Structure formats: structure tokens, C-alpha cells
Length: 266
Image (tube, rainbow, N blue to C red):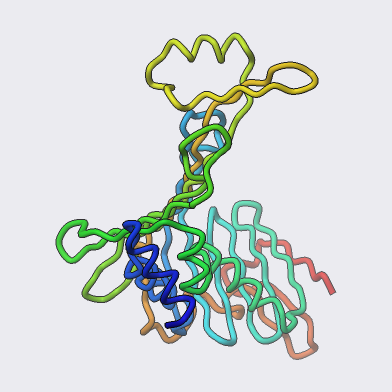
């Protein structure tokens, strides 16, 4: 019996689901099946709410294959091909042009793939308690909870939830919640202690400078996959649709973008 099998069996006896880990790892394979076009709705939320960044919402269009990459979000575009990286700011009508190198497309892909954590089955099983359950017609829900707790609380430091279509084995939504301790002043702390809603969510600690007070804060980023297409043949936008190269080697804006300012960074 391998070490992984022994560990996995022990976790199953503790109520975890190795199936959840296996399914999670398989779901992530969508990033490796190229080409792929993704439409992703991203949303941040926070409990308790503290600033505007906690409610950020945006939509991303992403395409990549082994030779090109395209990303659009908030009116900005990044287009990468064999020779160029083109950064388009549509609201400002400006374009930055860079020479491509071997690492750019790879780094772009990694930034997208980082949405869902990449790890082996045994590493995930060691880090997270796991479960899987039905979540409606043709849907399952995977939940991973960090085995590490936030200091002074019963809250896991991180939790991950994925819902997916069982029949086609594609993710519908992925969310990651990070739990941390946010400092509060003593007056707020003692006031919140009277509110049952904050039971177990308040922490105090003694330091050489005196007592310090904290409230548990949960910050969640969710990614809803509105489109996952592996049958697409070309990126939504190619570099030639934004910038063209003339016979003399100079680059100019493509038709329809003549009023954009082009700056070469090489």
C-alpha cells in the first residue's frame, strides 16, 4: 500500500472525500485542453464589508492556444502572438507595442490558470478537508476547507467551492474564501461582543504594547464560467485587427483605430 493510499484512506475515515479531490484535479484540466476560449465573470465580496474593492465586479474574455493569447477586461485588451504583445486601452485610445519573447504567453496562461489552485492529489488532500455532494440536476458541488485554522477561531484559513456540470465535467463557478483577522479598536470590539452575530468572530491578544483586538473577515473571490469553448479555431481578436505592419517595417493602427495613439516600447 502506498503512502498516498494510506493517507487517503485515513482521511476518508475522518469524513473526507478523495473523490472530491480527484474531481477537482480533473476539472482543472480544462486549462490544458487547447485551444480554449473562456468568458469569466469575476466578483469580490467581503464580510464584513470595508471598502469598494470588496465589491469589485468585472467580466473577462480569454483565449489562448500554444502560439497566441487574448484577454479583454474593463475596456483593456492584451493580444500576444509570435512576434508582438499589444496592449490596448480602449477608453484612453492608446496602444503600447512590445516585442514578444518566449515567456510572455506562458506567463499569461499561468495568470489565468492560477484561478484554480494547481497541485497534486496528495498535496491537496494534505492541505484540505474535502467533500462532494449533488447540487441540482446534472450538478455537483465540491468543497475544500483548509486544515489550518485562523488564530483563536474555528474558521479555516481558506475554503474553496466548485460547482460543475457532471455530464460534460466542466466548472460552472469557482470561489475562494480567505479568512483573516482584521484589527479593530477596543470600543468597536467591546460593542461587537454584545452582538450574537459576532460570536466566535472576535479575537483579542496580549502584546508587550497592550491588548490588541480583531474581527474575523472573510474575503471571497468568485469566478463564474459563462463560456468554455475548446472548438474555437481563432482568437476573438488578432493583432492585425489592432496594429498592422507596413512594407517599410513601421507599425500603424489598423482600420477603424486610426485615432488611437500608438507607442512602441522597442
